[in-house]
Image (tube, rainbow, N blue to C red; front, top):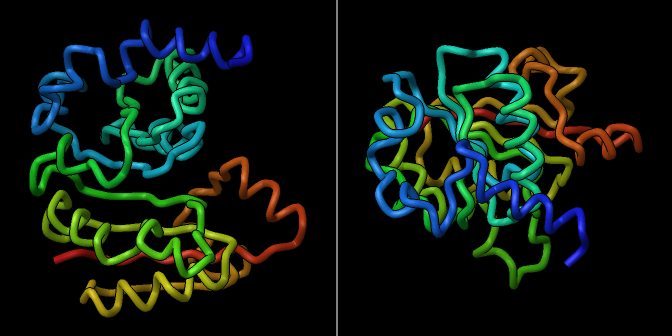
Length: 218
């Protein structure tokens, strides 16, 4: 393990806004986020596969009346977002180190108001279909933890993954699916609040179009 990565893992141990295995709240935070972590009743928003938490931190700055949780299994990545949130004095930010398919172990039914999926691994090979974050097995989880009328946002540079996601979401029966295959030249540009992940910066610099959609769960 590199020195920088080791420092980040050590940071996660001491950072109060990081929930991970070995910390007391890890085993009992389900259904208790507002009470035990944020100390307020505000809506909860998740960023799945958050990486360094660009959306988690960026949205938290814009919406102090909401609570934001970045979720990723990579501890060295979430350490970056955790430190940025602390430096910005953001009390409405937390990071959870876990895998997305384990969400039901950490959130009650109807506990979440909104989900962002930003530039996930598109798992382009057919063998990786079950790992796509818009695979029906994940949609079933989102439907359980999202409150009625909860919103899902997706941003990706992958055209094939985007088309797959539109299809699976429509077949799942979501409401009011709205999409664009060219976000920055679309009326929907305002919907993503001009926050860019590191991957998005790279892709847009290379001239890739950004695909975006949002929809609502019953």
